[in-house]
Image (cartoon, rainbow, N blue to C red):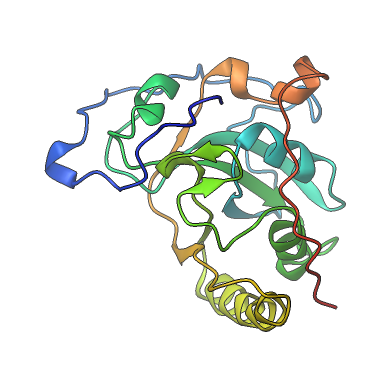
Length: 210
């Protein structure tokens, strides 16, 4: 996570690394908190993908959130299939660090999950979060249904009003239908449960939206 001099310009598709044909994570790999495979989407759950800087802290935010049924750390938004962490950090895959969030819509809402998203990082920073600089730290919301997309656009616009009032610039979070998601390596999954004193910077701005 300490790559302060990483490139902040997205790689061109033709210059991206080739990647590999299989995941860098064994299937199944069991979740340290939920006790089910991280690859599993529990029955009745919906999925949204959220990137808010380092995925270690972001995943912890969501496994602790009411109504969330599973989480996984991974890579998304780039060109290289099944990348490794080192490849993503090279800025030659185009991916951002992201959390796959499965949630029960009967127990929580996408609005609740997006409140966590917008209030726990600075979505106006572009290719960085604080001292974490690079394309892999960019903010993103990747949706899996048209309804999620519409909700996310509405919530983003509501938060933009609040960020503007607080002196911040334009929200730079990517917001689009989910591209291919690739699981991160085992040691990244539930990292802060395995390493309670691990790296976990706070990038919250204090901006809220009721």
